[in-house]
Image 1 (cartoon, rainbow over the protein chains, first blue to last red):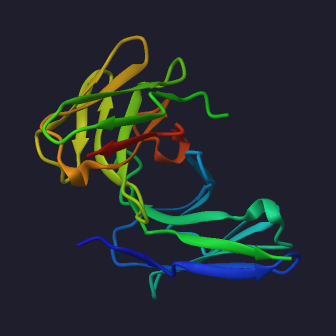
Image 2: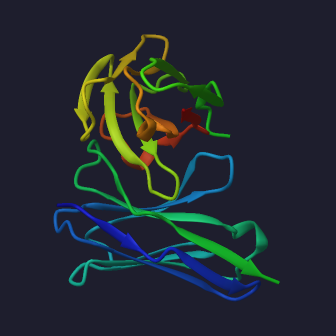
Length: 111
Length: 114
């Protein structure tokens, strides 16, 4: 069945780059997403990439997709304390279909 | 600020009771999806409504039901509550039927079942 896996924790020093990795199993995935969840808040869609793309950059965020290995990564440049949150990798086969989420990676920023 | 609100913020119920959670979407958002997020887990899709009709359902039993109203509000009803129903319930709305890339989430309702 469909599955999305990601590591549970990541610690990064303020100012460094953070790289959060994700693997998925559904070869029919067409949209892949990164969501951010801060305490007491809902999910915020950070960025998404269509499966025919290799890379997408949006300000400090870079998404890399290796479709052959079913591997997705999110790089946050110049990590700030405000980036401390849980980051969810997610995928969907169709834009009107259910979204399958990973369990989330908690990003901790070290001073 | 996503323009999607949910009520109540927190709720405590006992096993066997029934609960209704509410979501208010932005005007013009015809699609609403509901998700269950257990502690330490990612959200799981419960179901989706488009123009007041169910448009897809996840792997949840029939005691989870929903309604969507013409005024862009919606409800999630859960009957015969079980301890495992304790979770954060999130609604998400979109102006499009095919719109998971334009989906806005509310802050959620934290349900505790004792």
